[in-house]
Image (cartoon, rainbow, N blue to C red; front, side, top):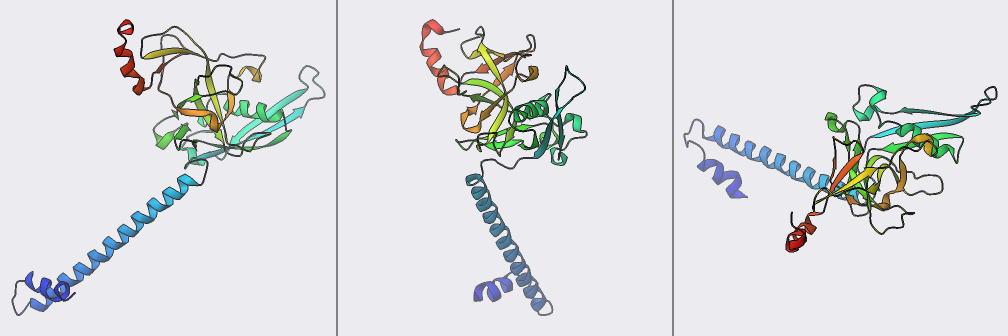
Length: 267
């Protein structure tokens, strides 16, 4: 302590009688200020990482933006052809960094959520998130304007409960519902899945076809509601611009080596 307060400031001075005290005091004050500032930065850095660790462990979702979807089923007594009508609206989009409400969500997403919930309730409000934390601690995102840089919709491998096959299906994530759906309190995801495989492009790529619209199901909206636990990791999906609705998925990198060992499957 004596070296830091007395000896070191003295050695770093010009050792002139008229400025010796001033220079030593200035060096000592600078040392104390820098030491205090460094301690504050280190403490804040440690506290920030501790907060992030707690945040990643406790909630089922990350740090998402949020918007609300309100729905209501009305009955039209005068019009016999259209006895029931579903009203849906979206609000609370300030955190989405959007210029207008028309750009706030994926096409037909609000309508799909309203149709899904009106099968069980007459009216209500649904909270939707743009990020969620999966079972494997993987963050999934589906934001219409992520950090003001444009839309971000992750693709993921999804296992459907009614799927007879053991494999997963690629799907585009559209929104997360942290409060669950009617009959379940588990966090769910709205996605647009692929329906079946098509021709193979190469050994490293598989071609899929997006689920088409069915006018007899969900008012022609080809989306699905799946629990968050059914997500099996991110999927690298490449849309085919020449054939709309066709998606190419890349095999996991750890499987590439096996392809080149089998000579009969080389390009």
